[in-house]
Every structure is written in C-alpha cells, then in structure tokens.
Length: 212
Image 1: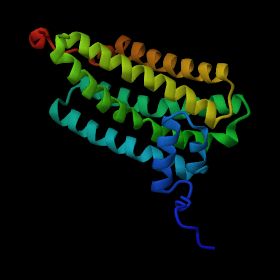
Image 2: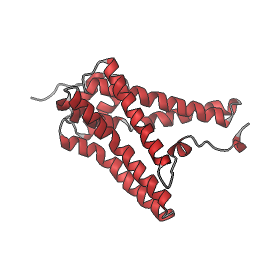
Image 3: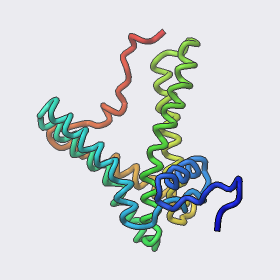
Image 4: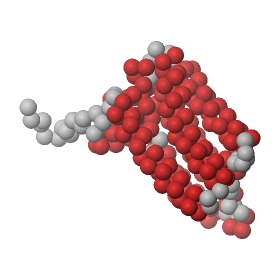
C-alpha cells in the first residue's frame, strides 16, 4: 500500500535513517526513539564498529608518535573505556532480568553517545559568544566542560531508563556504576606502571596566555 502525501516513509529499525531519527528523538528525551534501533547482536556490533575503528587509528598514531610504555598504557586504557559500558551494562541487564532488551538498548546507547559531539559544537559556539564579552578562557572552558558533562550524564541515564525499562533509581544506579567503573580504571592505570594518569589529560586546560 502506498503512503499518502505528506506522510514520511517508515524507516526500518537499524537503517541509517532510522538510527539518525532515533538519536534525534532520544536526544530530546522522547522514548519512542528506542524503536528506531535494531535489537540484535549485529546491531550492537555495528554501533560498536566506529568506536573500535577510531581506537585502532588512535592507537596506531599514538604508538607511532611515541613508542613507549606510557603510550601503550594510554592505548590499553582507551580500549577499556570503549568496552567497559558494553560489559557492565550487560551484567546489570542480566541481574535485573532485562537481558532481552539489552541489544537494542546497547545499540541506542552507543549511537547516542555521538550526540555529545553535537552538544559540544553548540557549547563551543555559546562560549565563543561569551568570551569576547570579558569572560576568561579558564571560565569559558569550565562552562563548556560543564555543559557537555551534564548532558552526557542525563543522556546516559535517559537511554538506560528507556532502553532497559528501568525505573528512575535503577537507571541512576546504572549511571553511577558506569562512573565508578571508569574512575576505578583511571585509578588502576595511575597506580600501575608506567603510572598513566588519565585525569591529567581530561582536566588539562589551556594556559592562561589567552585570558583577558
């Protein structure tokens, strides 16, 4: 049956158009966006592929630039950041009896993480308008990081709640578990040789030469 005029074509779950539509819906807090993602292991692997590809490229460039133990530690740590949400959320989904919902949730969560880049661009534009008005570079960077961090936390919480059919408190527990796991990985990386401290990279801000 042909669709009537003015009615947008139905996008297949997991198709590029469906994924983009789902990202836009979930990014605005609309649960129906979850149905735009595939619910199979292949959908999870497809969503994970760009992250793994970026990790491979970044790892090769890092090791080529400085083939040291510290560089190797950075590469291993970045891989742990890629895989930790996948492993930990699957364990929690099994614990809470939501394993059947996990593939669609994980595919949505992996794709929706890219929305943070869009927020970053919008935040950069906002900061660029505020900085000429007399705001220091340090304050601008703090505002930018705060906006991105807050949106990322909310998006992680909302997608978990919508995708795994969780209550608000369980979704918050999942968010806290992910945060704790990343902090534990960072502490372990700094503790073990060659003592790479990721927080030094995350919290590094430009020097004050650009302050007004």
